[in-house]
Length: 106
Image (cartoon, rainbow, N blue to C red; front, top):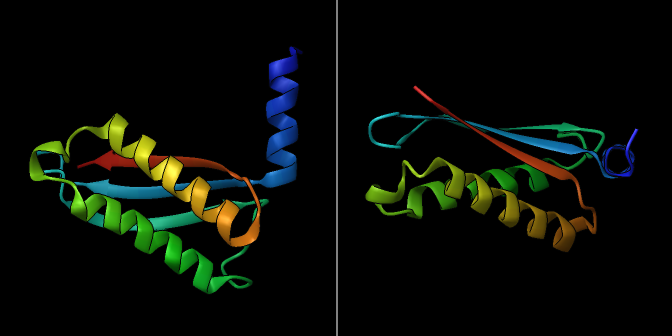
């Protein structure tokens, strides 16, 4: 295995993974469902319900404050969600999970 793979596996085992799942309208980019936050090896919703809720609020804020014409720029939205949640988790509990935003168009 390469060094990069080992480094990534170590990071996942130490810091965990956060998946942000949202369903968006393919035509307009409007939110249809979510965001749902799934945590593996990071924290549980039972331990930190307020942290998970605040993370959801931040994702909603990113999605709703974008201009309508920018709402279908999926890669840019994913990048913005990833960066915002990474900063939020570091600031809140000093942890750096891998953040994987999944935007599903319907």
